[in-house]
Image (cartoon, rainbow, N blue to C red):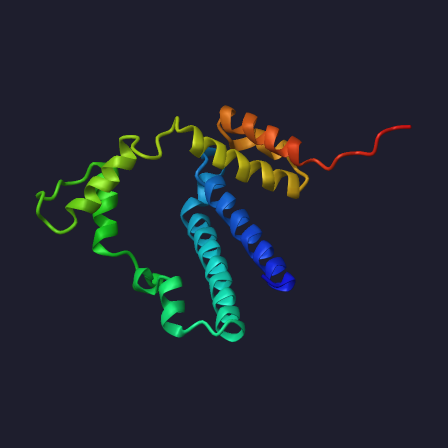
Length: 182
């Protein structure tokens, strides 16, 4: 990967991660007064940033490696793409119903799979509250942001204690080493 493209990749991924951390921040009770607006803003900012990166990488591949449009479409997974402009789909509504204990569709009804997926989140499926990988991911995001903003004290205000403790450790590791006193 050419150095300028590598630098752009790092910058855009960092920006997306910061937006993801903001999404997590707005789920916490102390800052959740405006959670709907801010969570959606930051989630779409992260998605747009990663989309920008994907298209930059695709443009490079097309222009400099002669990658065909068919191959790029495959790499970009365009068949999976969904437009936010069309709003939530029926499957999204079924998934929310599953999370929040809404009416259960028949097993063979459209949306039954989405409903069960929502139930999995509500019942602590793949991402249960005690899942160590999820806690570590959250701590990394919060610790990184605190270090980058030089605001370690912000970790005390809104995070669950276990996440705050891990985030402080992450931030401490990221602290720039000071020259040894002579």
